[in-house]
Amino acid sequence: MDDAARRIASFKSEWPDLYARVIAVERAHGVLYGALLRDRGKVKESDLYGLLTRRVKAGAPVASADPEADAGYALLGTRAAEVIRRTQAFHREVLSIFAGVAPSDRARALDEAVERYLSRPEVSLPDVPKDMTILYDHPYTSFVTDEAGPRRKQPYPNLSGFLWATHWFQLAALEPLELATDPDERRQGLTVVADRFGRKLSAGKPPDAFPTELPLAPCIAPGLVTIHLRAAAILDNLNMLHAVLTDVLVHPKVGNVRAALDGATAQFTDRTSRVVAVDDWIQMALRHSIFAQGGPALGTMTQSERNNNGHLQHAAGGRATMRGMP
Image 1 (cartoon, helix red, strand yellow):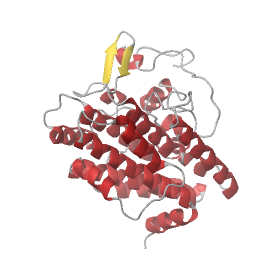
Image 2 (cartoon, rainbow, N blue to C red; image 1 turned 90 degrees about the vertical axis):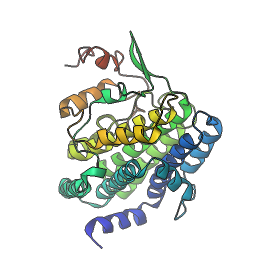
Image 3 (tube, rainbow, N blue to C red; image 1 turned 60 degrees about the vertical axis):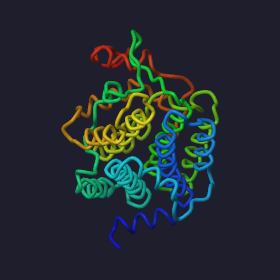
Image 4 (cartoon, one colour; image 1 turned 180 degrees about the horizontal axis):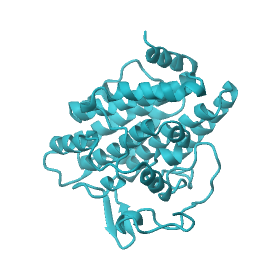
């Protein structure tokens, strides 16, 4: 067993509740994709939302196999499914590094994990950030643009909210493991993250509600960004890929769904397509509001810190600014 496999096994053994919930979230994504593809335009949102939330509920049993989730991923096509599942495994390895590697050795371990992940570039997302405008200007985007800038108009708002809440959880779970080394402090932090995730799925008031902006690492997992920009970029690229794929699945005018999914996947795996500078990626994430992305993993934030619509950055060609920001 190599070091990576040992770390994953140790993470599963030492943090079973977190590991089980991470797996449950990954499988819920597969179930969601399968339902959107099988029942195009006829999804019973309330029923599916209930199923998905039960699957990711704290303490929900996680079986050794999940044919329903596997079938959902298979419907995406071989390449898209492998990209997603491969990157989910990378996320688990990042969690295991934070959980089991001393802080002084984490950057090196993350370097090695990124290099292993990138060893198959055809099914890997790049370790450089993509421009967020990729969400707004693809042929099947769920965003509409007016004088206020791009805004999302999803036919299944609860399913979209569920997906973005799970992205918040996947990023937020990194913070307690990165910030603390004491087991009790870590457990307390993970309890906070788990409780906040549960409240986001219960239709409360922000921040205990669905994120209204796509959660991104610079806002929700700043510790990861500080330690390893490349790993953070991979995870953000995955979350943006999820958003684009779901747009394809629910858009009524997609003729060849598989071709559209394959095209989106190819663009995301291309490390030269729509790449932006690191500073632009971080600044754009912050301009879309930590609060709107679900709020911090552990800190307290009761109102938005955003002074204008972060999407205006795209509508104005990046010229709009927030007071106090360059």
